[in-house]
Image 1 (cartoon, rainbow, N blue to C red):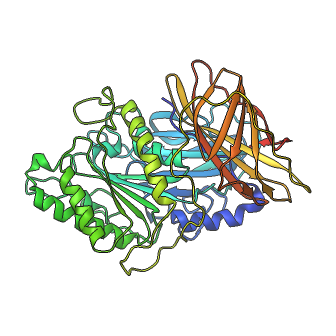
Image 2 (cartoon, rainbow, N blue to C red; image 1 turned 45 degrees about the vertical axis):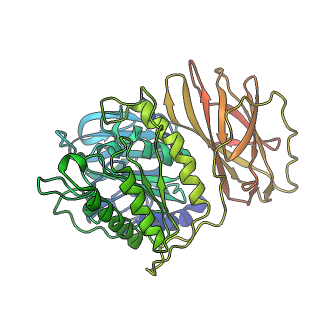
Length: 496
């Protein structure tokens, strides 16, 4: 099931700025090879999540949900792999493709692409359960004369911490079909998942691994090196632990105390992150989880929140007695995304006096909840007049999730002109009968296949060279081709 897409690469003139931003938010190491050569140390490649980069010739993702992204020129791209691995990849925002048991030089473009600029996202299947593939990135092989381009780095990152539920066990594409991946995509953030199948909050005498302890490490192995938290600072951390502790005899009092300790540990590593403690979907240790949050907030940390997930899973949302299926993960993401968005918009400063993070606080507030899903009106609002002076725009359109009968989309608008945009309406036409049912970060109307999306109150201004984005859910019963003919305030835009 296709689950995600990625935005197109930025213009070459912004290469330096984007490379610096990638280094700050994703924790890129200093380039030790020529930027653009496709090697693991290439500064144009962003490694999202916790990658072991101790070997400059081979980078290893240790947790599910880690991925790399970059741009490239030319007509082909190949991965250099050490030994056999399964992986997912997306080129130019297309649906993710799944390759199994590949090794050596892996051609991701058996049919060459049109010459030009392209984007690439790769997510490896990491070792878990009986699967023991070799998730090692040794670089990219490009056409002669081709080079990588700076990755488009989203301005925020959410870290999801948990057990096999957070990892996506039993979902169709593991990490890519989990509530964590889907929530991050819906909110337009980077995202990563740290989890251990069968893991507990509390380490037990009978061998249950403490995910809280492994949170401090680069990977899930007991001997994994300590993680360098200066690599990136999470803007939000979502914790979902407690499903497995009960069967290992952890008492309620011990669970509550250690949960509060873990929250304080997370706070010490991410001083400005919003921290969310989820009620486990089974309801185990719900009261203790809520009490742990109360203990921490009572100590002065106002940026920690208990999230009651009662009723989030639909009746058909489990694949067994514990693990959500694809529908269950989608239902969780639909409820979780507005909760996280609401707190990311305020980000109060917590009390602990630890060192400030490497990322600045966000100063513009997104809406806290998506619009209601009532049917849109059939009449369109007047189109805002384009600004005077040099105008130009580029639009990125991506399907970030798809299922039978529907899909989720993301639209990015870039002001390529010389004049600022002050208020915008973007218009396009669907050709396959798609109908939008809900949107966030924009209001919309649809008449037939024609859609008009208008800025929200907080994102109407787009400076020259800047971008804004919005997302939507839509019905699609057949083909779902990408629309063309985007116009911004009446000005035709290029499709990037």
